[in-house]
Length: 102
Image (tube, rainbow, N blue to C red; front, side, top):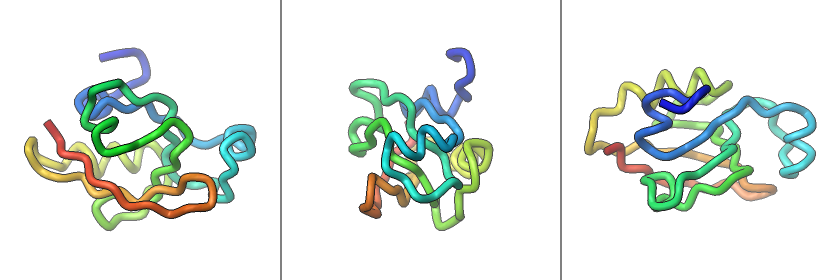
């Protein structure tokens, strides 16, 4: 497991950080809660789901995501082969996507 990444992040191909004020400004985000995508592994389930660096994940499987730890709690409960449904903010858009957990 890469430094700072959980097993679930490695499996789905995501790097995540809590959104600082500077990162909120950089990506045009209004929300300070959520998990900010800092990296997407090419060819990963996250890449296949269309996630991009700068996306702010604000809900996972119907649960509000307050921070990276909150997203990890929800994601680790999803069995292999099942879907992780995400609501994310990309600049001023709200988007839904689904990641199939390997």
